[in-house]
Length: 332
Ligand SMILES: [Fe+2]
Ligand SMILES: [Fe+2]
Image (cartoon, rainbow, N blue to C red):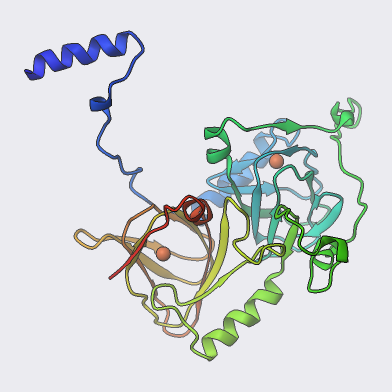
């Protein structure tokens, strides 16, 4: 068949709203990864806070960062997408209310908000609170399983421009205690892995530092911790896993590649992550930048500082790949 006849045939098929197997394009790589620069996004977040009030948008989100200004309160709702929030800046007085628990947001904390968990945000402090905001909406959308619910009092109070908030029924740390090493006996063996949980940076950092001192390191990731699910002991959520890693001063990891894409946030430090082996692409990063390593791309990380550790937080979709037998890794 000539190229012209094939093109004409394809055109007819497309005009009928149909699609043929041979039209399947070459497996396309996502757009070339680049670093989202904190120093560029931060002023945009402040601009967005002036331009758009929280009563106009569910999420004031720019470049993967969400901001709530002093005195602001975001409306309560819940949805079938799960969310993770890693706090970048703030004075620790802002909080997310999740299923009634007042979870304070200090820099470096990870808050896990499960599928169908009620949530809203309040910032009674004097500094903006900004966090990395990650949802599993791509998967939920693909499965056409997106549902939302709002409290009945959502209707805005026209006089006070106030949006519905959850009552604070549980103190900070409530769910962590509930699902801690001692827990109500009726919950032991509970199959529900969707629980609200907060992982405090003040608990995580000493573990990273101790492992670094003991040289308990992975050659491809440095000192690597996973935020385990308190019910299953496995990945953070069935759809997303969260990890944090420390690169010791001057450390360079070996290259590897694996299925599942990973979004990184630089908690602290300066370094470079290099993609691909044949035509290497360097992603230079510093404090609070974000970048993505797409699925099945070779990558390695290097801490540029010879005196200070670098810390990277990341969220990946590897739990999905593992669940469906699609996880694969190759090491250089
Ligand atoms: Fe939400
Ligand atoms: Fe990796």
